[in-house]
Image 1 (cartoon, helix red, strand yellow):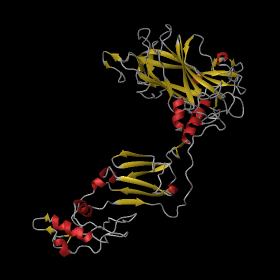
Image 2 (cartoon, helix red, strand yellow; image 1 turned 180 degrees about the vertical axis):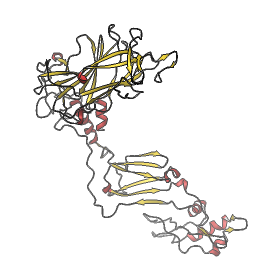
Image 3 (cartoon, helix red, strand yellow; image 1 turned 90 degrees about the vertical axis):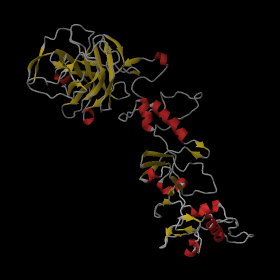
Length: 517
């Protein structure tokens, strides 16, 4: 449930200690539900369970499974179900979820279903081929309160049973059999309160009970040495303490700006009237010609921040871009890889993979974001990578969930920003460990722009020399905060700030086309 709430809100942030009010409120309401008393019992939440993997699950699909707990009183109705759920995972595997500790378990019984029992004429054959019988003692008065009913003693002799079966015709003499069984079962007095079986007329129910196979079962009991514990505590989700959770929407008072947010106020101004709130973009403004933005905004206005133009800081990351179906092309000293091109005029859209990896060891710099600017065909003087009609760009991190991807659309570029996941107005992460080793992301279903001029340019390709194609340049940069968080430094990505790509129309008179098309 904890992970479900985190995933639903997309705020599964276990890296930042700032309080998340919405998530904690939802969990607080769930906690009220879990500890609510319904019919004399709390909500049953799976605590543990068992997996039964056996061919018997397939052979007996209606096998009866009974879970008995210590302290169960047969004379009282327990408001709790003995188990939470049975799930058949496959033909031979069964999963059972329980809401109490194993130490509270008395036994688990697996019993043969009644419809799989059979009628049997005796339990074995004599040397002469005649059946031998063991009759079950029946009761019409004062039967045993628990356990199996005992076997009738003495059992019928071989001479008696010989009259019940004709071996030559292999036929059962039903009438003599029923009368003899009825006579042998009778015991006790017609009056009184002691044990007795009084029925002077042979009948089919009586005979069926004697010829029916026993219902076999397998019972598991914990070892006697296992200590018995108290009743299982009420299950609760973890959330910030000291908050008055309520399910009454009428009386709920919004105290989220001051209550339960830790030892100090968060960065920025406290939340006041929503109409007067100042909303800014974080952590940096988009390009000046931005016409739309998907940037997340934060409440409160931080102190002014300035850019440092001249800085000795160096680049710490490398960038590779390639279609998802191709894989990362190898690097060669004498040119690009023959399969390292990006096809244009495609029948089907593919994803672009952006591999951003830290090239050096850890350091104490405060990484603010990595920005990748993809030129689109809205600009006519530069060879574009993305078609201008890419109206719904979507991106996600490949593996490192400590970062999130924001996208800005400008009149000339699709700007992709990889930012540390944080609730602070200025998200940052120190690069002193492996948390910033890989910032790779995927850009979904990218329409690649066609060339703006005839394919007369050439690029140097490993093993093939000069090859025709379109050169497109992707500009990218790394941004770092200063130690006092009052200024930032912009560093060209990879040292040069430009990633050059090779676009090709792979369909020619002697070329069947790119396999990705």
